[in-house]
Image (cartoon, rainbow, N blue to C red; front, side, top):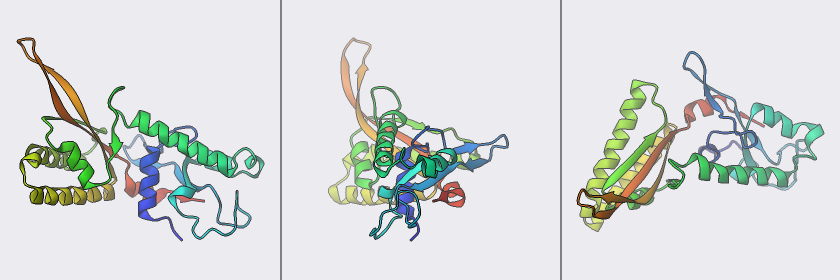
Length: 235
């Protein structure tokens, strides 16, 4: 059974496009500005009877819980017969969990005090945008005009919804949540993931007074799903 698109996207997003062992970036850019992939979706428990860490009786081996994202070198290392005792199932599960925690705490931050989480539903995104007075935006380096136009359109859509969402009636807000869910689905198909959080900023006025402003903290991350699908090796 092949790995589903949902599990593949979840694995790459939660791994932050990095090897769980050495934390090397897996989608690289060469001198010609072309992307290439050194990442491999590796099974913790092999489906093959003579494979690494095989266990009988599994209904499906190709699920997120049984996958760990590694670079080619470390994929070879963990599956080498001489290293099996060094990398049992429990150790790989622990390595994966610790790496994903590190990604959440370190890679998904715009600074040391504000942390953003992967947004998976339109209602989550709407809740972050609702009633905010400002949006703090961040995205990966833009290398093509096409990327600039697409990411720019996302920012404009999110800004427009932030400005009007809290003023609308519940029926209209529900439609916005539906539209935002469609947006999230679309961007993930194109290889982008949206992270976000709701934060409070202290605004100081010239007269010395200050006020607290709610702000939406949004980060657009490009994992380049297309090249992942085309080049990823699976054990």
